[in-house]
Image 1 (cartoon, rainbow, N blue to C red):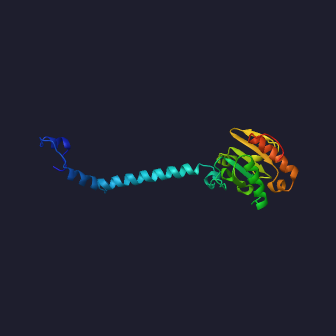
Image 2 (cartoon, rainbow, N blue to C red):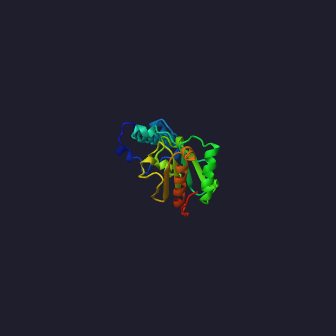
Length: 202
């Protein structure tokens, strides 16, 4: 009977043949050498490998400078900066005499130092204009030289320039202004215009 064909076997078997689940699993194991659960595990492993390969390929297609570009921290401003008034100064730090002059001028304009943020020029080196704009300053007072794209703005020293929702005033370094009465008077006149005060000599 082993050599008989399926057609000849059908003449002897009147009823249909059904496989029990246990027998089906045994047949699968004999055919593939793995159980159903093991097959499922292997499928999951393959899918994970494919996902990782796709992610690696996606990263490899990125420009090298983007892949290796460091994530920069936000620019840190000293002070409360509650009114969005940013004082950008050339000096790495401001001595007591310069700070005293700055405080008196801002107070005379109706603003306290709690409303102001201080930022040294060196903190802006290698930072983009987008990084700077993320500070969301409403008034920018730039004193002295700064290595930053902000210098590309078409601003004349001691004249007020509006760019979007931000007002800019560029002037000499605070140290130079504190030592020169003419520059001090010029700055004071510009600050009065900036903060909508009546002009006059200090």
